Amino acid sequence: MNLSDLISPLKRPPAIDSDASQDTDAKSVLSPALAKQQQAFLAEIRSSLSRDIPSHRAQEKRIKERFALLLNHTQWGSWESIWPFLDAISKFDFSTATGAIVLGGWHRKPDCPKPPCSSLIEDMFALGIYSSMRERIDAIYRVTQAEKDSSVAAVWALAREYSPAFDDAVSDDSWSIGSLRKVAEKSISSLVPKIHEHLLFMQEDALIFYPSPADPSGGWRDFWLFVRGYNFLPGSIKNSFGSYFLLLQIPSSK
Amino acid sequence: MNIPSVVVKLIKAGHLAPRLLRYISKKAISMTADLGFGVMPLQQNQTSWATEILRAMHGESRASEVRHLVLSLPKGVIGKEAEKSLRSIWSDWIKTYAPDRAWVFAIQHHNGILHGHGAVQNVGADARPLKLRPHQVKAMSEVKFSSRAISAKGIGKKGRPIYSKPRKKLAVQKLAELLVLPDGEINDSAWKAFEKAGIVTNLRSRKDGIPISFECQGYRIRFKTLRQFIFALHNPPQKHQQKDTMPTQTIHSKKPLSESLVERLKAAGFGAADLASLSLNLQAAGLTKPAPQKHQQKEQQPPIK
Image (cartoon, rainbow over all chains, first blue to last red; front, top):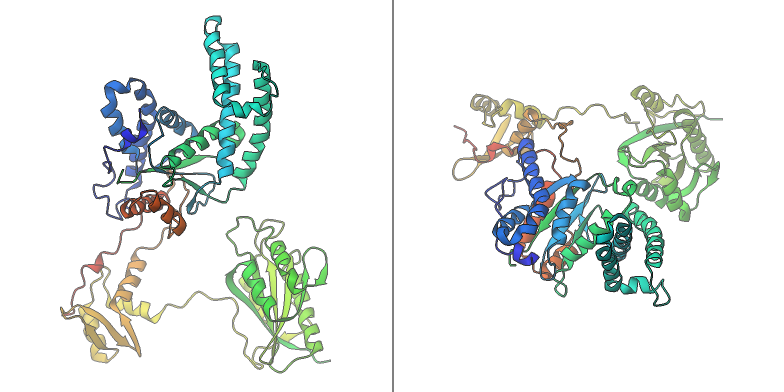
């Protein structure tokens, strides 16, 4: 399913907290009880979206409507609760979707959202690849004999897809599962402290991922690369990200 | 040897170390410091380093980074002896009130008055801000901490009370309580009485009769100001907001999006309405509790009958 198809039909999603989206005080006067109710409602959508997608052909309209409800609202939650939603997003095609995504939660006193530096995105991207590789290799030893072939094929598919990431460390063409795992382990062990240091000293309290005229899907893609890498970080680091706030904003002209 | 007289003022303000150090070092004729390595002379180019040391223990404390004390000698007292006196008084002050804190002491000469500005590290190694009790501050103003000086109160420039007392109720606040009812309407009888007594004069009104302002004791006062006082009186700010399951993070930003970011988003196809919505959402994200209701009086400005 294309993400831009999903977004476009409802330019201004119905706001459950206010029927007047242009009323600047509408959001600020939301009572705590109502705000809690709203967040619970949005959390339910986030968690169910991933389950709904496999049968999206039958329910495409419903998914669109439900996804649209998540747009243009600040959402709060813990990292565990965000992951099913990100899993759902990963199933969409980002190639033509435009949007700005604000993600925060590292600091107690967040300030203006700022774009993340490109090296952090690159490191998160690399961490995502190497961690996926490690996961796939580990899965080989867990699955039954019948499923082993498909697991091995998945490992080679990933290695081929991101071959430059593994070429640097594997000198000859004789790749083996063991050597791929070594490369992945080595890279992860160097990337994790680097990213951790970056996150610790991150001045930007909230990150904004946004597109550019040359790269309309940059916002969604960078957001996905960041959160996928983040999800592979060790729990001790991830736990510092207590609760997040997430805002998905799409341009009304799209 | 004459005992110098001195005025001691503890400046009550939330000081940031860089700003204070910049201020006191700018026109300093000499600077000394104890930054944890003993007392030493401090050069102008070392102030940034000193700044970092003064706020090293501050962390995320809400207290001010540094405390600011001013020692002033009466007008006309100048010379090396006077500088020595200031330093010795300062050394007594530090030993008495902040023995374990780092400090910078700068001497300035302004219009014939020799000042000593002391910047003291507020949050120390104990992670607590410097506690100066009112009685201590009073003793400070009387220069009881040093036997090498006396209070200059009454000599030359009079020493001001240094620990600010609770602010006196403003005259306009009193006036508001008398003239404006809790619902924001003007108390007609009080107004007439005041007008008759000549306390309030020169009323200005709009064409439709809604009063705008009046004069009282030579000042022009707006009715809006009076209503704001009354509103503040009946809607005190709530210090301890109820805790909810919502996170307490705030995006406290008058401008949630930087100008460069706005430009980039515009270039990417975000319209003015999108940006406004984004800003609004970001601002709303900072709220754990709804903002207080706006005062209702704006629309209802009753004319004085």
